Image 1 (cartoon, one colour):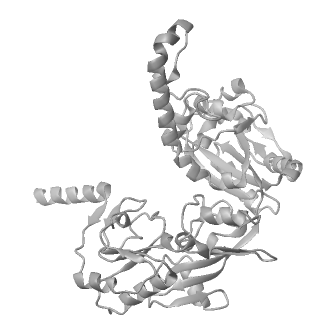
Image 2 (cartoon, helix red, strand yellow):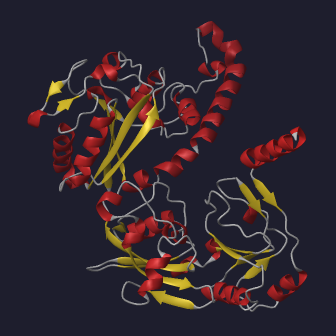
Length: 461
């Protein structure tokens, strides 16, 4: 009995922490039949290890083959071939975008993985006019759609926080970000789809044509077909974004302010809220990056609370609209009950804001390289520098001030360890008083500043 329990525990630990790995021996008849298919692209039969991995790293199912389609017809031909093998066949097909599935959804054990990114990118076409849209391949990355449509002064209305995902991938789920409260998720901004069905048919569908398939495929987790093309609604794209973060310690004020903002007719263009761990001591590492207007005042706050609540907002604008934008932002912020000194803001381009998460992915490597460079420099120059009283902060494992644009000592290393962006250029505005609640119009109260322990935590997400 005890032995069986130990075996069960070993299996559970392997499954929970090591993921699931399976190896299927490919059917030689299946491989031979795939060789005979007329394709514009090609199959890979040996180099298939990448197709057995995904972002979640919890499962690893090795396929028998990977299709690199040269056309939509290649996908239809392959799916039809599998369908015609009959219901007793165990051969499966999975469409793989950029590999950001969490539990092996883009894998096919002993089956066929279709590498959607291999579809020709020449299919992307932007149509301007009264109702602008873009036609793009299901394997196209959203970041590429942004850059292409921006050439025409246009952009999709709704986004995900991370743009290095495929169109077919997010439309098979939902596509949610801070614009969703205004425009709905990405699946609510699609005019038309081209889908390869489970029978291998290529079908064009829309709200007016083959509407059942259209609505089933959007958010359908790939169970109703493979999205090979999408027609996505566009709107005029702004040039700049005022990017704002504020902190709360009171959850009720936090949620009520969110509800007020998303219900207002005139409000921000992007709103997201999230919970962050209240880690003391981080603020000093971020102050050099955020350039507080009153460093002494901003460093005096402490809190015993375990978490803080961050509200992140943006207002889109063009340079000639800066004054009006400033007034609108101030009017909206005046209604909120955030901790007074916790207001961060910066102005970035529209593309920089939308691509913020991907940009932060490179920070750990940048910080590491900067530290290594500083460490090497400190060793080489210590002999000659001592006489001048010079010290290298790299000797303490820190990034030297000025080694990265807009980054002060240890900021890059801290940002990397927290998994967030540097937030370079953010400003801290001094609003309200310290340590008290202030009466606002309409009986609303703004939180006092004593509850704040770490202004910089918000920027670490």
